Amino acid sequence: MRVLLGVTGGIAAYKAAELTRELVRGGVEVQVLMTGGAQSFVTPLTFQALSGRAVRTTLLDPDAEMGMGHIELARWADLILIAPASANTLARIAAGLADDLLGTVLLASEAPLWLAPAMNQAMWRNPMTQNNVRAIQALRPDCQIIEPDSGEQACGDVGPGRMPEPEELARRVLTWQRDSGVGRPENGPVRDLLGLRIVLTAGPTRERLDPVRYLSNDSSGKMGYALAAAAQQRGAQVTLVSGPVSLAPPAGVEVVPVESACDMLEAVRTVLQRVDGADWFVSAAAVADYRPQTSATQKQKKQGDAGLTLSLVQNPDILATVTSARQARLTVGFAAETENLLEHARAKRQRKGVDLIVANNVSRPDIGFNSDENEVWIVSAADETLVSRQSKTAVADKILDAALAADRLKRNIEETV
Ligand code: PMT
Image (cartoon, rainbow, N blue to C red):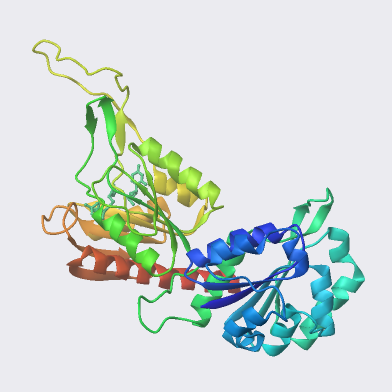
């Protein structure tokens, strides 16, 4: 998808640099166009480095026009986003002025137009600004005005006028692309998870007895890594909190390595706090339910001929913690069972309060732990679907399909309530 990002004069212009980075990370081609005012806050070179394209600044630049003229530029865009849109820019758009590059491109383009106003709170509230916003909406009913956030402003005032955070704006753009199908590549993976932020866990945890010994399990991380890779290829922004495994990090995925269940909970909490909650939390890790009550700092010596009794304490339940704190819109858990697969999976789904449980039979050597293939049941409140034995990569795609369907259903229900 091709986004023409108009950056106008205001302190929030620096946030547009971060927005450019986020969009490019989401696979969007970004052409930045800066007004004179914007260049007083951030240099075109910053945007050029982030977008990989020369920034357009003036209408009458023979060199730039030799490349992509302003009319071509207007036709090139799938979406025009002006962020930040200053009070002056709103007034100029409302008046239909075409005496600079931005004004000219706007008049010449039929692409959807989104404006993210950002200014001092009094300027935003001013009836003249509000009148300009209404005029733009009346003249271009398709234009989306992204309401500014309220809060402390650079000038010290408090009130509405802050440009929404770049991550939030980028997420809106990517979600729009996903839902509208605009600019979808004809070849290559379906990018139906664009705009989604997904946090996953994978692999085993190690619960230390001493510096050289631990309690763990047979998880290789293959299932969780396959999910992370597939989600990233389908356009999601993915963070993978991983126990110790010997797999290469999937391309484009942020990997946070951890060792124990307590480390994993801490890392998940930190990531979720940083991203202000995830769209989806997928818990594929085989987390140890117990850890030794004490962990020795030195290697423990054998004590004569006597046996050894270990005292264990329960680990926190990471999945149940995320679910009960409502830190993700959709949660997906796994159930690793050796008997009564569906029965246990149903109970686990309800007990942990998750939307979907992916149940695998870990008593079979050809699937489950450490194998390259898996066979799973995907259990939701509404139905139970068998995904027959196939590569973990293919199973990962089926799980993501089911999660996307459940998420759509959930969002529709929430929107209509
Ligand atoms: O890693 P692989 O070798 O590819 O193998 C894949 C797998 C078998 C490990 C994977 O598909 C799987 O089933 N993972 C979950 C294993 C497990 O711990 O299941 P459980 O039934 O004990 O836990 C239920 C759910 O709660 C899981 O989503 C688990 O991540 C989560 N949990 C469990 C305990 C705990 N303290 N915190 C948790 O978050």
